[in-house]
Image (cartoon, rainbow, N blue to C red):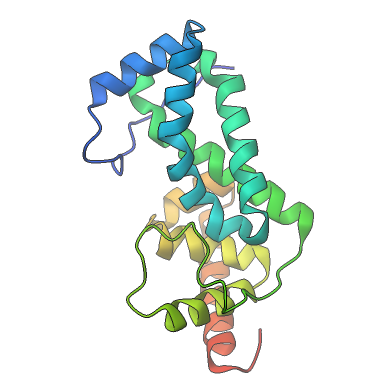
Length: 189
């Protein structure tokens, strides 16, 4: 399996692109220490992507993503495209696992927002309420809303990641926003 693509623009600011590309190349050659370092670098990023999509199954989605990355790493032709390639795998695995489980219980306010939140909330109660409203959405609607607004991807990118027509993404977003407003107001989805 061969992979390529454009580099991900949201890579960590402190990561040196050539250093990461070198790390990928060493891991592709079978360097176990490089593989471990690569997984350590990718795990938090993957968790941030998987959390809002797979919800209670985020740990499984993260693990499956990292396994898929290791399994397909030798086919990555453009090491500088690592972060975009990993994002696509994380979205695909999260969607697959969320669709498989179809469980969407509300977030327990006592536990606060899921660990996938990249920025600690200023108001933990508000964050818990937002995550609870999001958790009440059907998986297909939660996925497009999460990718569009939490991951800040444009509609075309969401469509490509989910392998859906652009019109389907737009209609799901419209419906997801309406469902979210109803869930937020307490009326339920």
